[in-house]
Picture (cartoon, rainbow, N blue to C red):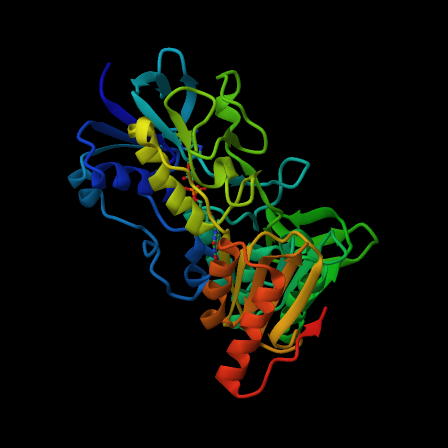
Length: 413
Ligand code: FAD
């Protein structure tokens, strides 16, 4: 059999997979298959820097074509993998079959669509480079913006619109935004960041129609009757893991590709990484699918090394971490948002700085900071060590008294 690593999905996790394979000394063939025509590029800037006026369109590409070719990677771009035969070990692309001895699936996730088919021009999701350029062009034209969904990406779009002084409204179906990501109390605190910066947020409402004339969006109509004028509508209602092409392959899919703690799928020699992987995180003793930059990069590398050297495979465990930038402020979250008890150990929820710790039983389960860059990784380390909540509080108090001379007085939330 040809000694060939095939990586499906040419984005962050896929790129890290091929880099790790070569970095680890793999001398066989490598093919990197990507549905988009672009070289691998970075997504977080798409809802941040790329939306700023005049940002260069190519600025988020990770590596040049020459650099990838120097790594000995055969690039198959603008072509989706449509099937995998796990018995014969082949992957179908454009009616050709590419044989693999090891494979990494890093097909990520697609933006979730609103139900109900066609939408007028001016309605966008924000997942790809091309989406970002379309949103930016509308902002350049001074659009009145409605964002559907108060998640992190929609919130960053609102922030970009306000940075240009443009009017923007976020509509959210839940009574409190971000409840699943950070819990209701902190969801409310982050929502106040929007209102302090001039973004209108309407919660607990359902969109009944997106109306337009002559191919242009005009307004978003809510079920209770309100009509919101709009030239740009950005739909940010979550994602769906990109697994449709695996139907019938025998690879188990359940909210993403089911993987063990080694990132191995249920098929021999096939591993998965990044937003598409629902893997068992040994640190928390349970399966999770996370859509964060850091874990996608790390999983890509680990999946490739394990796929190529299964006899010395290593588990992948992590304390999940993500960041988001709103109105010039950095939000950072570590851990898992289980447990509903929180304490503010620095700043206040109505200010532009806070550090909040989350308790689950006796343990510190998560931490959320607003403009708390010098704090967040310390709490990540504590979660990694499975520190108790009381240990974390003692740590926070010691930091507060050494940094500011006065003990912190935790505010219960
Ligand atoms: P993806 O980046 O989704 O890439 C998957 C690739 O596979 C895509 O190019 C897709 O076209 C391709 N593909 C899909 N199906 C097939 C197929 N059948 N054949 C071939 N190719 C296929 N994370 C943070 O932690 N902080 C942030 O601030 C942040 N901001 C973000 C902003 C935006 C706008 C977006 C979209 C994401 C953001 N993220 C952020 C999340 C982060 O970018 C993702 O976690 C990361 O991109 C996941 O990488 P991935 O390689 O697993 O998947």
